[in-house]
Length: 324
Image 1 (cartoon, rainbow, N blue to C red):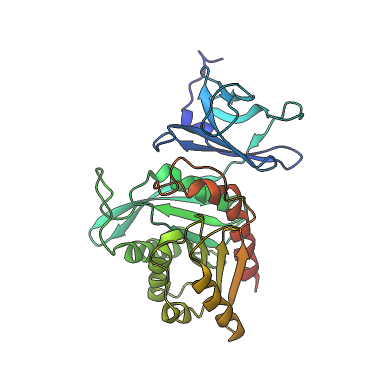
Image 2 (image 1 turned 90 degrees about the horizontal axis):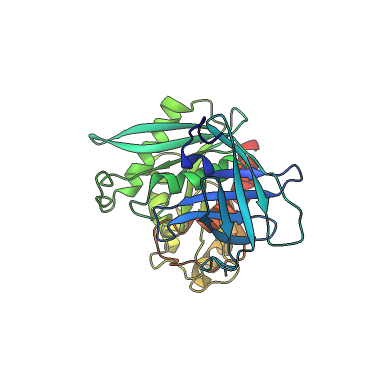
């Protein structure tokens, strides 16, 4: 079979689910310091690196940083030139599982922005029309493929999600200083006009240090909502002040880690806004943010905790907002 069919290893990445609803996510982190595919098991709550054994078989170690002793394995199964499922041997008493891939329609886009083109990827769920979200993150010029993993996680919850590379990221450069709000604004506008005019609603999903930029983007274009997710235990240094928060008249969701430092002031201000009648929703993340990461500040590391659990919280909230 391997001699007849040829598939890209990119096919390994994606969201897979068993008939019983156990979701297993494969994240392509080869262009990060992890240097591997990563596996997240929604039931076991484990995040592991995959070590290549041969073309189709990867082994799982006892932790994120250890490959030995082998505690499980993944065997990808090809169908023609596609990877449709894999055999998963988890590190528990469960028998072999056969998660099937959740397929999305994905469109690679070129978004015009002040004389240049932004690379973007739009991931569409099976339902149409659906709410539309643009991911805004402070991960610099992280690979678009990594951010697309977060977009797929939102699409699993019924949200059409787009990730983009900021201006300046072509050819190994750096984002333009203070350019992220404009880049996000242009991306959302392009999607609303050209790619997904049938959307139910449109807004931004901001991660960690991109909160201020997302608020500025939302002020430029009348977004329907803004969802904020903090994935790190330590709060970003540049949190929005009280006046910025009070400028938000659209519904906003704020997801905080269960264990974190530096969030007390913004937490207090958000509760004041709720008491004043502004449409603010505060949630605690369902994930365990004590999962050890190689470098929590590494661009792209937010994809792992966000895709593992936070995306489902955000998607459900967006669906509820869109239905009102």
